[in-house]
Image (cartoon, rainbow, N blue to C red; front, top):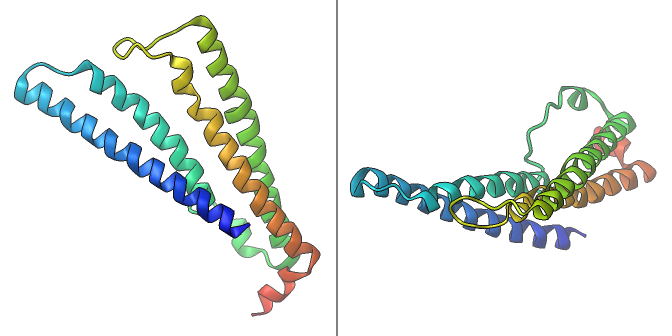
Length: 168
């Protein structure tokens, strides 16, 4: 399972870095076209906004996978043994529930309704529904990670590893 997580992490990091690099290029070109050439590029302005959405959401999924996401873990740090494992399982289930309801369900509905209405971007002429698909994609990735992490914690709980890890 760790090999699969490593592969997905590598692919997401490559994808996020590529999008970020292209985003930087778009912003630099926007500045050059606006202040040096005197004719701002509307295409790179719009593209930068959509790239930022994708970088933020796919990057959030990546940080979930490498366990570097923003967390307030004051309670978790104070707990020990089985209680800590139960709390960590609950947190993973909460992440999965949020991802499923808000990102996958809500994001899919948004993307599908936007595709159905035929809304397109002003400068690029792309369908906005495709741009919104970053929501369910990132949500599905977060559910994937949360399911694996919760399963690992449940296995630790079943095998009593929570108690031995605290003694070391």
